[in-house]
Structures are given as C-alpha cells and as structure tokens.
Length: 330
View (cartoon, rainbow, N blue to C red):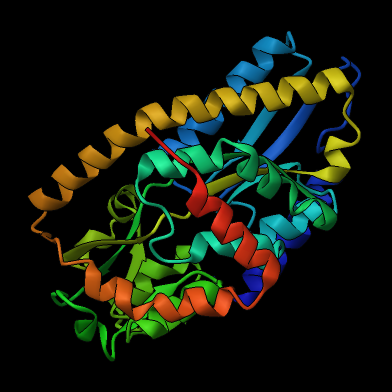
C-alpha cells in the first residue's frame, strides 16, 4: 500500500467518520465504527462480529458495531491514530504494534515469556492483564479485552532447524522494536512490512519469510509462497481490542458496561473457535505441501536470553516480568 493510498484512506476515514462514529442519531441509537486488518474468515474477526451481536442484544438496539475488516480504513497503526482523534471508535491490533503507544506492552514481545497456554490466560485475564489494558489510556486508547492469537512461529522458503539456519534471511516483522531485536538475536535480518503488503513481498523475494500464528499463515495464503512452517513458538503476542477514550468517555455508565460485557463475552467465544482454526490451518497447509518442522526450542531460547537482561535494566519492566513469571497455574 503506497504512502499516497495510506494518506487518502486516512482522509476518507476522517471525513466519512468524524460525524458518524458513535454519534447519537435521531432514533437515539449509537453506532460505533470498528476497523481492523484481518480477513473475515479469521476467528478474531468472527469474535468481533459476535461482540456486535451481543452488544445489540444487551442494549436493545441502542448500541451497535459497524465493522470494517481487511484494512479497509488503513493499517493497524493508522487505525490506532484514527482512534486517538476520535474519527474511529474501535480497532483490533496486535500488541506488537501497540507497544509503540504503550511501552509496558513490550513485555509480550519477549520470546518464551509464557510457560504454556494456561499460564498465558492466567496473566491476560487476571490483574496483570487489566493493568496492561489500561496502560494505553494516556494515549487515548482504552483496552477492552485481549484476544487469543496463539503462538507465533517462523515460516520460510527454506528449511529451518536451528537459529543458525536463520542467518542472512530477511524476515518480515511488525513495526515493533522488540520483534526486530528478537530476529536480530536469532541471526535473521528483520524487515518491517505492512501485513497487507506481505504476500507480494514474499512472492517477489523482498523477504525470505515471516513469523505469525497458524491461522494467519493459512488465511493469508502465505503458504503458497513459503513451504516451511517452523514451530518454534517464540512468542505469544495477544491481540487487543481497543476503544477511543474520546468515544468511551462519551458513553453513559450503562453503555460502558454493555460494551465491556460484550467484549468479555466475545473473548470467551473467540477462545472456543481459536483452537478449531489452528487445527484446520495445520491440516490445510499440510495438504498444500507445507513441511511442518518442530525444532529443538532450547537453542532458540539461549539466543534470546540477552533480551531479558536488557529489559531488566528498566525497574518497572523487571518487576512486570517477575510478576508474570510468578503467576501459578494448576
């Protein structure tokens, strides 16, 4: 997507939404515009559709969502910027992108932070999670809930068994300094590229691979270009659903409760369908001829230990990491 196209999208969004987003109409109903970058078949998109249905039911039609998927209104970063000026009501972004707005969220980019999925959910749905959802409020971005985005792994055009195999490979990452540092530590060459531009970049050899979760790898059709999926599960970056504080503060307490309850219920729904989406994606990429490699994770862990040392130099971040690691699960 060119810079000119990005600019046009933003202008159109501002012009078209500034008088519509979350505005009360004559019927005393309120429509909140929600834009994101995912395909409509993605489980997280389906969760947001579910949220819209629950919100309409809870409010008896007084509140509803108007959802714009597939980067119709811009990239993740552009949508966040539209939230900040109140021209867009809500968006869903990866916490990897959001760390540029709320530094505490960099913690999710630390490789091998969570022991397992149970540990991850205990953190995201507990006090630490609530604290992190609120961390972007000074930037006019209020987190409503985290969506499960599984674990992220590499996918490439050549087989990768060890970190040494990543040496010299140009690997697409999000606009996240933490993600770039991780790839550097593992020996690769990090290359930030917008999600919507990645298929073409892979096809044309601009990058040699990328990293993401299984459903995103499958639904983006990146498996048509990259025939190796390397299950190193280096990070587990959740997605985050956010609302502009300019919109949130204009809602009544009752309306805020409806929105929050609908968001929480959509998380429960998303967790149910996420596992199914992972299983479907795994089966389909294998059918398409992708080789799924399960390497020894220890060499990958060893390569990124220095990132923990760097993070620990910040007292606030050190405390947060210790709190996360201290969370007990059954």
